[in-house]
Length: 397
Image (cartoon, rainbow, N blue to C red; front, side, top):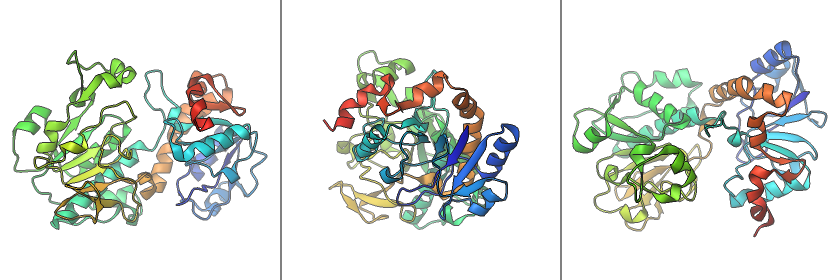
C-alpha cells in the first residue's frame, strides 16, 4: 500500500495537511508504509521537511493506492480509478459541490469522506473541530474588543503557533460580559479551552438567565438546553437526531441577556435554528456572533455568507438584516469563516494526523471495516447504499 499526500488545489489555498513529516516518518518506520508527497509551495510544511525524513516529493502520484487531501479536490486534479480521502462537503447536498461528486462518479473514484467517519453512536472520529473552536472563540473575543474599543488581541494567523497565541491571554482583563457557548462536540471543546484560558467563569443556565455579574461569565448550552419536543416537552438525544423536525429551539431567552454568541452546534435543514430573523428586535442583546460551525442561513439565520481569514467579520443591520460594515452601532457583528483551523495550520495538522493514525489508518489498510464502509460515499464510481439518497442531487434534479 502506497499513500500519497496531494497538493491542495482549492482557491483560496488551504495550507493544512493530513500527515505531518514526523508522522510520515513514524508510519514508514513502524508500519512500513510507503508515502509520497505532491510538491506544494502553499503547504504549512515545506517540501524539504518531508524530504528530510525520507519521504519522496514528486508531482505525479498516479502510482499511489490511496490519496489523502484536506479540502475539496478540483475536478481537473482528480485521477481516475483511485481512492481518495478528503472533505467533499456533499453529504448535505451542497449545490456548489454537485459537479465535484458528478466527476468523482464519472471517473470511477472511490471516495471516503472524513466528515462521514463516525463511531456507531454518530460521534465524528476525525476532524479539525477543536482548532476551529479555538480560533473561532478567539476571533469572537477579538471582534467584541474591536467593536467596543476596550481591549486588543492579535490575529491568530499572525501567531507562530498555539503556544504563542495563548501567551497573549495572560493579563488580559475582560469586561463583565455574558457569553453563550452552544454545542458539546469538538468545536465546543475548543471554545471552552479559550474561555478557560481567559479566566472566564462558567455558570449554570438558570443563573445565567436570571443574574447580572460583575465579571465575565459563559454558559455552555448542550442539546437538552437548546431543544425541546414540541408536544412531549422533553429532549431525548437519539430521538432528536432521528426526528429533529419534531423539536423547537429553547434559545430565545438567551438572545435577551447575551453579549457574545459562540455557536458550535451541528446543523442541517430539519434542525431548528437557534432563533429566527424575526427575533432580531429591540430585545435582542447579542452584539457579536462567532458562527464557528458556519452554515449560511443555518442555525444562525443572520449568517449571510462566508468571510475570509484576513477579514472575518461583517455587520448585519438590525432593521434591514443586510450586510453592513463591521463594528457599527446599528449592526450585529457576525464572524463566519469556513477554514478557521487554517489560522493554526501546523497545530491543526498535527492534531488531525494523530487522529487519522490512531483511529482510521489500520482499518483503512486492512479493509472490510464498518467505520470505513459507512464513510465510503462512492465505490468505483457508484454511490454506496448509505448515500443512495444523493442520486437526485447528483442528477441535478
